[in-house]
Length: 385
Ligand code: PLP
Image (cartoon, rainbow, N blue to C red; front, top):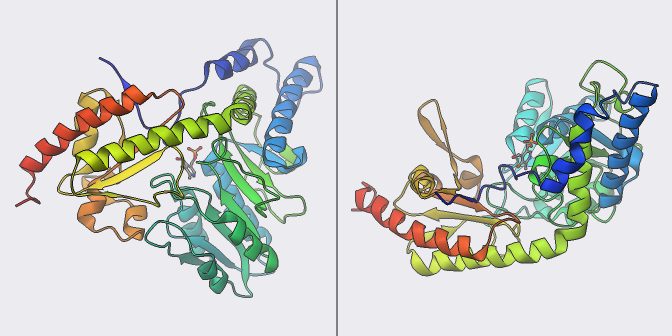
């Protein structure tokens, strides 16, 4: 069966050039980068080369890049690390109500430890009003954490404006850029970012490799106890092959990002227009234009998102829905709730996240298959009288 992958926000396939770059680092250049001998030095050179590539990609200095295991760890590190290290200044953190669980649950953890967190609500298009962020600042505020683009609905936040507000108020600014790093330009100086999370597996790199950019001078403490790797900030032996793969993925992104983004925007718009033209009672989730080039997320009235995911899967098409089926109860996504979708519309959401290996033909095929699936599900729907 022909298989089509439209779930690139969940993870991307590893580019074959990345696989090739990683291969020697499993059994030829296998040393521990902390070892002083030849084997160690070779591995260390590879890690430092990836660090240079990552730093120059976002306008940072190499010593401001800390390699981690991925986006989740970087988000935890930023929030808990900055939170605890700045307790003498204050205990208040500002974030949005559509962050990834890695940020939201770190915030909830910190609340349980006595921190105070303000969750600024987004507008109905999934975008924060910077004035609302400004209003939330008080003298105890130590950190603002806002994602660059949302993983479910693709909305892109006014990071530059929020960065300026943070800078004016001498508050650290963390950005979860997991969905944008390697896809749209990110420069930590232009955007006034102090900390930035990224993850290799979202840009055709391997799983289990990520980074946290930490601006020089930022007060942060490690939350991993162990060896002295990464200037004592992130203990544990480096994932050398993963870091090399991450570096290669960034190198490829810096060459191809602009063209890829244009290509994906075309595919995205074709899919949005195709769905709107062929299926009635649909609502696009997220802003029509300030959205990731690869994100299409619709609420389709009178259907369950899960039904669409399964129906498309039977046709060989992989997408995701906005509900998480946990322990038998179908919880609609916090993001769809935050943009004001009713429970029915939140349950009827489906996300297509496109990637560089998709084609126009695949978009046509997906629309062609989606139409009868929606018709069939609606026929059976108790929601449609
Ligand atoms: N932040 C965002 C916005 C994400 O989309 C994801 C992954 O989906 C993460 C954080 C977590 O990244 P990782 O899977 O590398 O832990």
